[in-house]
Length: 448
Image (cartoon, rainbow, N blue to C red; front, side, top):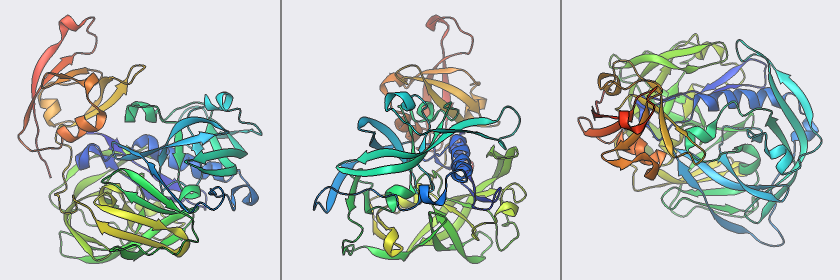
């Protein structure tokens, strides 16, 4: 079970404004990581260093009279990856994430390769024990996407890639981009075709057959209201941050200043790492939730411990977070300038919500990211019962080498069907050659 959590510090220092928990309990392949949690936290803290002039009015522009463009993206483990040019060089892979309010470069090697200048060095404290985190900020880099360009964009740059998103995704990832992108265009996302259609923001564009949902843009992030029915029968109108970088369906943090009641059927555990330590809580389901006129049933939800998260929500009053596992059931259009989201049902709208049933947290390794290592085994899970341990290497699944499989393909297998069995070839940690590999049977088990 992969745990992935996001906590943002809001515009008031240390005001934790969102927990994006992702655990493979929810759905392997929809995860946004504990790494992304710390990235979100870091981005806002770095934002304090930039002046108002440095972060205002930074937009992408079309060349000439061009009004729209269609550009592909890649969906990998429920993260949207787009290609950007930086200072005329690249392309580089960036996560497209509405939960990010400041452009972040996580790969410090880009400083030299794209000749980034006007850097200010800072140290960030508050990440727990250990040395302060070192980073740079710059008010001036040029970023290109397709034919569009944003000049003198502010950015934060890590001095060390401590988040290792590349190992999680299984391909090079150089950073994250959010508000600057979505505030520059009307953005149409076709999850079926994995394409972005971007329009000039002044374009008079009404989504054909699309249902309009009001958005609230606060602190450079989008929010909406969703009607949710809990398993207790209680119905609430929940204000949720809408986050394309969050892999879960929803997390519910605070219900009018008090904790949400956790359903009786749940999985308890450590959901991730926050600013001050581990985030505990539960994974369960809600009876239903709405997004616009559409209702989704039996939705998997996170209930983080109130003392860890809900009690620390200060800067933006809200109840929780809605992630890409909801959004990708539609084709969507973001229009920040008109504070609107348009929805058109996709082919997977009514598919059931499933969680990971293996209990494995995996990470890619090797120069080509073609090796798969076990980074954690959930206690009591199918993987634990099968004898898998941390630092074991998965060599093959049903006789197919993992080097020939994508991380998303593996994720989808492990959430496919309860009681489904796989033959797993494993190289135990400490083994010196493939002659010591073992073959085990892993049988998936649904727990919520």
